[in-house]
Image 1: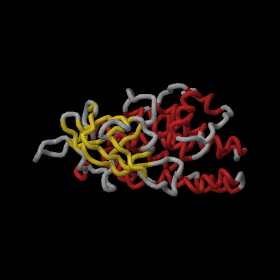
Image 2 (image 1 turned 90 degrees about the vertical axis):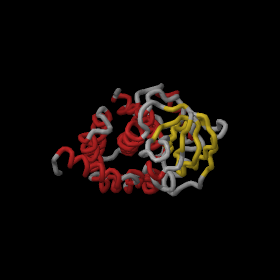
Image 3 (image 1 turned 45 degrees about the vertical axis):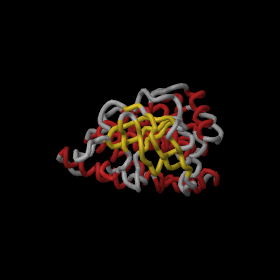
Image 4 (image 1 turned 30 degrees about the vertical axis):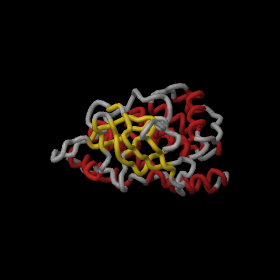
Length: 295
């Protein structure tokens, strides 16, 4: 990771449509490794939502290194559940049928990773991961209203009807959906912290706060090197989020003393890291049990 590039003063990319913004980001930084994409994308983002987008794309590339260099999305949720047993989307002979209810950056995504069941009747639930192109025959996106949190990152519902796909090798749950939770947490935390670090540089925040943010970024870089399914990775990631939580009061004070524009963005979007808090807590408990330790 070329840290000097992150630490040096940077001109943020202007706000634009998601496809245009991402293309501008890659034009600026090239085709970097996943964590570097998250860090530099977060640093160059004008909003927390665009920083999230950079982290999300970095996590997708960590999950699927052969992914095209265009926007993508992982499509799992059905009826507010990500449990395989609750899914009705099916893959059969490289054809996908079903619906996914929450797809990040759905309209802008060029390719979609779709979790689908493939077991025969009566067999245990088995997931596969299929890849489809947005706009291909049988692939339709239904745009949903913007949310109060990160309204600049669209989301939608995916409808699949006889959509031809490529099936990725491996188990859809163990090799893709399950590890993505950790990959997304790590890369989004890195991207948002990089955004905060940039705001701190531009706003002359106290040096101690800037250095603590930098230390958090270094921790993200280390966790990103670990296996996302390992218990020790989950424990280390929990430590990073605890470290971030300890900064919240100082961050709120720094924003309150600075430019109102940054403060408004932070107040609007600062809850994005709390979205998967319950899942992280469960992973931490399981990791502690596996490792035989308590914290």
